[in-house]
Amino acid sequence: MKIDGRTRPAGIIGWPVGHSLSPAMHNAAYEDLGLNWVYLPLPVADQAGLVRVVDAIRSLPFVGFNVTMPFKQAMLELCDEVAMFAQMAGAVNTVHCVDGKLIGYNTDGRGLLEALEEEAGFSPEGKRVAVIGAGGAAGAACVGFVLGKVERMTVVNRSMDKAEELLSRFERYLRGVEAHAAVLGPEAEEAVRNADLVVNATPLGMKADDPSPVPTEWLHPGQVVCDMIYHPRTTPLLDAAGTVGATAVGGLGMLVAQGALAIDIWSEAAQTRAPREVMRAAAEDAIAALESEGEGDR
Ligand code: NAP
Image (cartoon, rainbow, N blue to C red; front, side):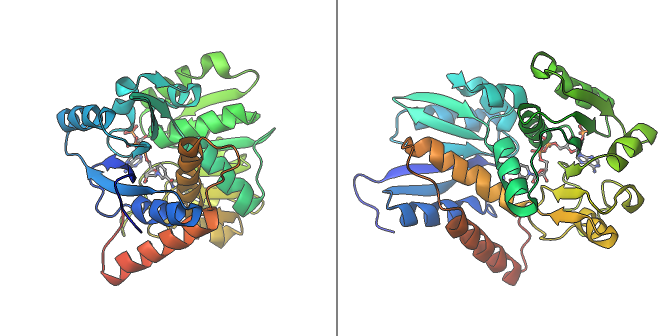
């Protein structure tokens, strides 16, 4: 990588970001595409810091930046414009800097759909889906499913309030999609058993002793079971899917696709398509490096 007076920065704002795979993925893509950009970790500890850093970015030649936990929701309020996908998701994970203005996007939902198509041949139209979790990632997944015209979408969460609040953002856009909220119990069981696709959008599975977010008995062959978690590479849910003969999809493909879609937005050139395979290889190398250091990427 050659940095000179015309290099444009990009980066990831979050806390912590020390184990983020995004710098490795993005910098590999920029090199492959011949872009004079550099992607930096931008650790920001709190909301006040977020406001200061975002303000400073307006005065710098940033091409754009990503936002991760815990600031995806807060970033909504700091953008000058927010794309409809991000408004519906209730979270911004990608910001494009255009002439000092910050335009917010959410590429997680489209990233998830791209990975499901690529890795499981899954397309959402007319399908029944169960999303476990009701945070930012679940919201982004629901955007993808509503726009992809699923038949039925059930949001299963430990707190009903958050699941209902998530679905309330979609009321105007459902156009025939049947949407339900449920807590873990008989209604959730029915939804998961009848789902063509089950997606874990909770952090359950990141820690070594975490249980699966749904019981193995609720899963069956013919289903696609996706865990958004990408490290560890396997999780109790993915193990359960394997045990029953369902198609298991980990979260790395989604991570790569959401990052690639950010580059596609920032590069503004319709003919540029970020190199997913280069980014995936860089992310896998970064995970291997973390594993050899005995570190967990969360
Ligand atoms: P978030 O906004 O904090 O939401 C987390 C959700 O999980 C909430 O609905 C929460 O329930 C639920 N939850 C948390 N701990 C739980 C537990 N112990 N048992 C049951 N439910 C629990 O987080 P997020 O940004 O949506 O991210 C969720 C996961 O997706 C994370 O693991 C993240 O790494 C992953 N992710 C992956 C990608 C990717 O590209 N692969 C992209 C985005 C996110 P309450 O509402 O009751 O609090």
